Amino acid sequence: MKNRIYTSIAIVITLVLLFVLKIYVSDYFFDAFFAIIACIAAFEMSRLLTKIGKYNFQLVAIAFPTLLLVVNLVGVHFTTVTGDIFVFLYTILADIGVAILMFLGVFLFGLCRKKKTLHEIGVRNLTNISVAEFSIKKALNTAITFIYPAFLFLFFNFLNHFNIMPLGKLTDIGSNVSVFVLITALIIPMITDTFAMLTGSLIGGKKLCPKISPGKTISGSIGGVLWCVLFGACVYLIFGCIESFAPFMEVFPIWAYLIIVFIGSCVAQGGDLFESVIKRRAGVSDSGKILPGHGGMLDRIDSYIFMSPYILLAFWIFTL
Image 1: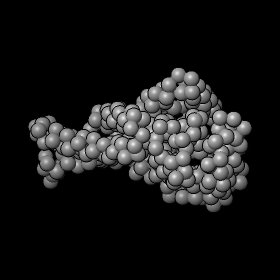
Image 2: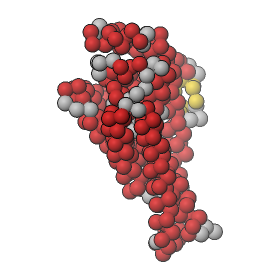
Image 3: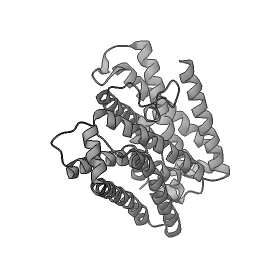
């Protein structure tokens, strides 16, 4: 428990420092931070897939988030220059295109090194499978890491540059709205997870999904959502006291924000359960050991992987 607390404090301090750098220096510190996290998480996901028997190209899985970061930042730059929403949408399509090209690349790579592929098939004791079959399965397994966690998690790049994203009324406001959007995306899973654990420990009761995650209770899940909404209201009111965010409050009422927080808390718990399914299939309790008391990086960001695209879509819908 001590290790978990110390690690949590270190994470909070890191995030505070990054927000200071974002406000006073540059947004790109957060971009680099998200890319590093995505690379580590992709490595852990690659190992989990291997444990399940879904063999993949681990180096490609680790490298892909960096490539995706470059594409996203190029898209952000041209969106800033043009102010055209279609440039932003083309960036997402470009991300998908890069993933498809990488998939085709690793498939062809497996075919071209036929001798090594045959050797790998023998080492893994696989029978009745051709080089082409094994190569395409390995490429598909590698592509899984492109989507989860890399593609979904790196929507945080767009949240980090929300000010220049042509996504509704918020883009016409002078204050640094991306700070508010990013804080929202980061605190929802954090508060949900913390208070779900505390509420579940205090109240107990019926298990939420005993076959997937035996430690989670229905009372903890409900408590996590309720506390998250309450905390969200406090965040909204705090930002409401900041003069530069007054224009934001005029176009974005508190009821809309609390709906986003409520649904977001449910999304965060869904993301947590999704990773639990993967770990259970892999026969492990943690995805890694990089974060003392928390397990692996994937264990820490599982709730955030679906959160980033959700928050982007939600703020867009409520500010059209």
